[in-house]
Structures are given as C-alpha cells and as structure tokens.
Amino acid sequence: MNTTAPVVQVENLRKTYGSFAAVDSVSFEIQRGETFALLGPNGAGKSTTIEILEGYRDRTGGSVKVLGVDPGKGGLNWKARLGIVLQSSGESGNVSVREQLTHFAGYYPNPRNVDEVIASVGLEAKAGTLIRKLSGGQRRRVDVALGIIGSPELLFLDEPTTGFDPEARQQFWQLIRSLKADGTTILLTTHYLDEAAQLGDRAGVIAGGKMIDIGAIDEIGGEEARIPLVRWRDANGKHEERTHTPGAVVASLMAAGAEPAGLEIVRPSLEDIYLQLVSDHAHAREVENAR
Amino acid sequence: MSTTTPTAETAPSFGLGIGRSVRLGFSRIKLEVRSYFRQGDSVFFTFLFPVVMLTIFAVAFSEQNFGTEEEPLTAAAFYLPGMIAAGLLLSGLQNMAIDIAMERSDGTLKRLAGTPLPVMSYFIGKIGQVFTTGVLQATLVILVASLAFDVELPSEPSKWVTFAWVFVLGVTTSAVLGIALSGLPRSGKSATAVVIPVALVLQFISGVYLGFSMLPEWLQNFASIFPLKWMAQGMREVFLPASFEVMEQSESWNLPGVAIATGLWLVIGLIVTRITFRWIRKDS
Ligand SMILES: Nc1ncnc2c1ncn2[C@@H]1O[C@H](COP(=O)(O)OP(=O)(O)OP(=O)(O)O)[C@@H](O)[C@H]1O
Ligand SMILES: [Mg+2]
Image 1 (tube, rainbow over the protein chains, first blue to last red):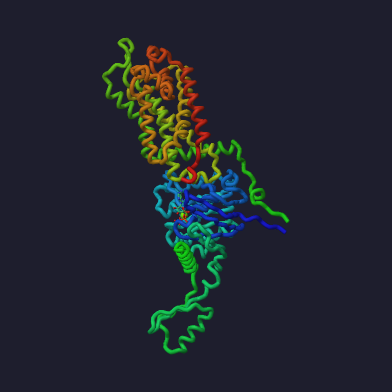
Image 2 (cartoon, rainbow over the protein chains, first blue to last red):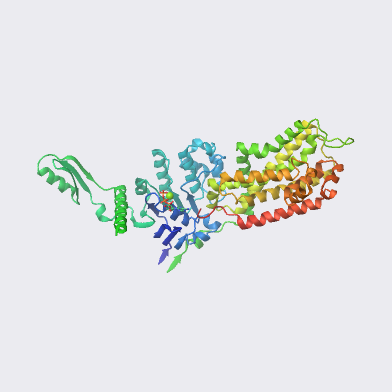
C-alpha cells in the first residue's frame, strides 16, 4: 500500500495577539492535487492561517506541516516549491511586467514561460508597461502571475481576484483549472462563493478563528441545507417550504386551485449555505455569551 | 507500507550554493539599477545632490581664494573631495537606509521573503546598485568640476590608485551601514525623517560643507569616530595640493588611518546586518 502524506497538515492551530485569539484550534488537511477553499467573514482568521502556513507568521500553538516541513523552519528549497499570492501588496513597481516576471522566473528551478504566464493572466498588451502605471486589477493580475511563475507544487491564493472584472475572473478560473489539471495543490480564500464553488474541491468555513464546518464543496453545510426550497405567495402572504419533492409540492398547489404567484424552486447555492452557516454560528455565540 | 514525505521525493535541491547567490545577485543589480533611475526623487536627492551642491559652492564663492597667495585654489577645487565623499554617504548609507525601510513597509521584502531568493543575492543587488550609481555620480561630479569649473585633476597614477581604494572601500562601507540602519525606522515614511538629519549632521561635522580644519578640536575628535570624516580625508589627499596636508588632524593625510577606520565600520556594519536583518517584522 502506498499512502501519500497530505501536502498541508494543520492540527489545532492557534494564534493569539495579546489575549485575542485570531485563530483558535483550527485543523484541516489538503491532499496532493486538491483545491481547498478557506471561507469566512472579514476578520475570521483566513489570512492569519495562510500566512502561518507560508512561514510569515509564527504560531502560538498547534502543529503545521507544509510539504512535510514546519513553515517556521522552511528553507530556500522549500520556498522554491511554493507559490504565494498575498492578500495585499503595494510595491513601487518601477519595472515593467515582463521585466518583473523574467526576473522572478530566475529564482526558480523550473519556471514557467514568461510570455505564457503573461498571456494566461491577460496582460499581453501591458507586458512592457511599468507596474506602477497599471490599474488596480491589472496589478493584481501581476501578483497572480508572480505566484505561478515558479511552477509551484502548492499555490496559496489569498483573495486573488479582488478587483478583477468579470472577464478577468473567468480567465482566472480557466487558469486555475489548468493548474489543477497539472496537479497543483491550491489553498484559496475568497469572498466570492461562486468562485469557491467553481474551483474548490473541498471547503472549510472559518468564523471568529474557529473552523465551523469543513467538507466537500457539494456536501458542506450538510444534507439538510441543500434541500430545495419552494417559494410562493398567496392571499396569506409569502410561503416557503423545504422539500425533497418540489414537483409534488407544486402539483398540490396547482391542485388546490389557482396558479400560485411568485412561484420559485430554489436549490440553495454555496452562498446561501455559507450565509446560513455563518449566521447560525453567530446566533450560537450570542446564546453562549448570554448565558 | 511506505509513506512518502513530499520533501525528500519531489524536491531535487537546486544549486543552493554560492554560485546561485551570485548569479541572482547580478540579476538583482540589473533590476535595482533600472528601478533606481526610474524613480524620480531618488535621482534628484541622492544622485544629483553632490553636483548641485558643488555648483552652488563654486558659483557662490567664485571670487574667493581657498588656497594661499602663492598657490591659489578655487571653491570648486576646494569642495570637490568633500562632494565626492558626500556622494558616497548619500548613495550608500542614506539611499540604502531609506530604500530598504520603504521596501519593508510597502511589501517588496514580504514578497521576496516568500521566494527562494537568498538574502545574500538581495544584498549583492543593493551593494551593486550603490556601486553603479556611486561610480556614475563620482564621474559626473569630477567631470563637472573639471569641465565647468576648470578644476585641475591629479595626474599621478598613485593618486588615482588611492582614489580607487578609498572609493571602493567607502562605497561598500556606506552601503553596508545603510543596510544595517534600515531596520531602525519603524516605517518607510519615518525613514526619511530618521535618516536624512543623521546624514546631514555627519556631513557638516566631517568636512564636507565646512572646512574640517575650521572645526574645534573636540568636534574634530567626535567626527573622527564616524567613517565619513575618513572618506573625505582620503579624497582630500587625492584632490587637494600637498600643501594642505598640514591642516589635517595630526598634520598628515593618514591614509592608513583612513583604511583602518573605514574598514572597521565595514566590519561593524556587516556584523550588525548579519544579526539584525529580517525580511519582515514577524507579527507586526
Ligand atoms: N498583526 C496583528 N495584530 C493584532 N491583531 C491582528 C493582527 N493580524 C490580524 N489580527 C486580527 O486577527 C483577526 C483575523 O485577521 P485575518 O487577517 O486573518 O482575517 P481574514 O479572515 O483574512 O479577513 P479578511 O477577509 O478581511 O481578509 C482580525 O480580527 C485581525 O484584527
Ligand atoms: Mg484576509
């Protein structure tokens, strides 16, 4: 039997700033070739978690292995296997897109082709432009390009598509799919739930530093949360019914008489499920605090 | 059953040796020099500053004789060595300390920290940038002095040998001290406020703007603690007439002293850098 160790292993990770726990006993694993989406509201602890995995921040407790190495002790060989797109970056950018990418390509043992990378983020027309003269979304694409230039085994993407126009986002999804096809392992955070649904294999939802749910993208939130909803209006107001047999519900409505107004059958999207999870968690906290 | 740890299996180590550091160092020099000249303010404040100051002094004191009756000396000739020394300080210490503090706060260093770039290559890039811009700057100052203000340049090869080693030692020391100082300011914005006054005071007490022999002895002794005084003294040996030697401290150019004092600061700078340099402040 041959088992491959997970690319990322996080166990009971804890990070405190003073008495405030930004990350509180978070555990997850990412297998080789998998895309894991880390979801959660602002301040949930996503970036803190990612930056610990990248070796930027020390952890307060727990154990972390990234490509088999403790990120606090990762050397140059380890870094050569990672691609990092940070949540924010703001260099002065006095070099052109191509100069910057060509230069960074030199850091890695098997870099990607610079022009292909530029094309893959849709910056062909701007390849010769100084980075500081690019628009915000274009600069962000340079960040993504720099993250993938070294053909990383493991790619960290912290809100990579902030500021992307819809077309750039589609192109980015295409890019990530091709990286996945090449076997790249990806850790992604995003506030665009459609993005997570499109790209992720599994997701973890983190809130207030705690992992509140984790699972396959199409299973997270549980069976219950995915049951379709039938909504309609009548003289008594709005109605909503969760049912495995929406057709039957509609049929019975029809049988009862007139065509129901505002009829919809909704399969909860990842966004609906996510919002439900986060608000349930917030409620549970309030109840806990009230005690 | 076998468990494969990804580290051992899939990562052939790729020449982490000195060769790679140097190769990437040269690649960084190219990038650094390019972006230096594309950044308008650094070109003015550090690159052209000595030429501008030399011109101002040469024009303002054009009627004055800085030498003796028998051996007259123009203001341009008198100020040339000081301006070259000031250039070493500005291109090296001032430029590096501010530049690296800025790069630390704007995220450049954070990005580099996440790549397999050796710190050594980064330093080579910085020192190479200082060296390149320093050479161009000194050349410009000397050319302007000679062509615009008729300063007579030394003809003995031995003077130029002295110039070469004082320059190389000075520019390296200055750059290394700048790197060492870059960790001091808490942010890029405060770097300018911290570094420029320090550099300015050093220039005033080290014989750059004011003739060193005009300073009281205690101030001369104090200035002798710092390297700029010694770099300026070395440059005076090269560019001033021999008759000026008696005006130096201990009435001698004291080139061995120049080498020792500057070299000592180089070592101090290297040690401080080695101990304190971090790509980023963790957990800030
Ligand atoms: N250096 C720090 N010092 C003190 N508190 C910090 C520090 N960094 C982060 N925090 C706190 O930790 C919490 C988690 O921050 P983090 O940046 O990980 O959130 P996030 O999930 O990435 O949010 P966002 O979606 O807004 O990016 C926040 O409450 C933040 O204020
Ligand atoms: Mg974040």
